[in-house]
Image (cartoon, rainbow, N blue to C red; front, side, top):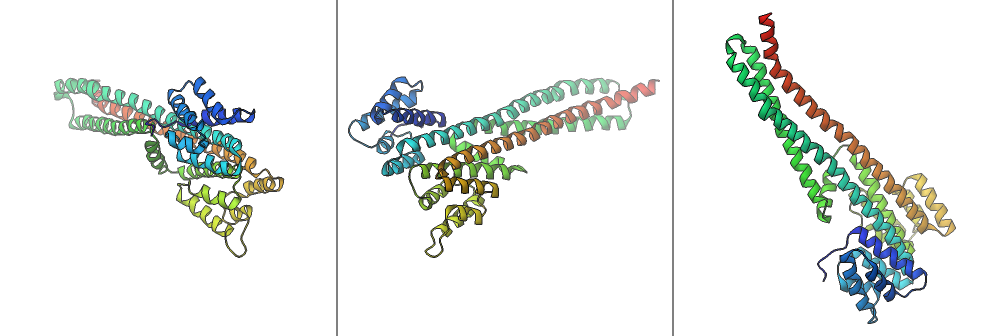
Length: 350
């Protein structure tokens, strides 16, 4: 078993290039060998060579991928299903689209975490400088002038110190969380935990539902493109759903499709259980009538993915001003509080 697990971008390159070479009549083993010779990714090159060695001994592509290791179980199962129906090329093309979307999502998650982490680090430095350097200077000056300063003025200084330390501690905690999230975004399990954490932000549920629906739609498209009937494709696609709300709807829809009495079609089921919005159901209806349901599903998946990315951007746009506003307010209040005694002193002199 290979120690290196292929990234989404590498999986996209594998599926896309092998599908392209199959489309021009190149045999599978030669296609994988050519990809190994021209790949710039060392992990992908190594796995392609292992797959090639299996293929030249008469092993099927899915079995070769499983033996080589490093390939996602989802991709292996998709290729295996397509081999039974003779739609390997179409399935690889659909998988390339799927992993392209996944790679873009991972990149977006990293970008979403990186900027707040940098912003919080800068905020921590600013607040640490204020608390550690500016406040002690004011305290020394006021202590030397203690005879001319009222007790209320000293109280203002105390308030300033408290505000400064509270803001610093809060910002440091937020910075630590952001840095942990940034490190976590580099692994699959870490990204899952990060996604669950982001899902708790107000307004994020709709974004995550759209994202889950996008991935479910893409998976459904891949299974149908591989030649599976709609009932089997729906059942297999449900197993990839992690969001409970969507999984419940899809499961109920699937049950209505496989009932022994009055079984519903795919379109009727997803419409009745509101898996998709009405406008999306109409799109799927036209796709079913034209015999291009897999293409419509693939296009719908891309649209939903784009909508979820816009939602992520909106969440980030909401968080950044809050962080910047908090630190600006904290620094401002701290400086005002420590300046109040000076104002009182200047007033008494006048």
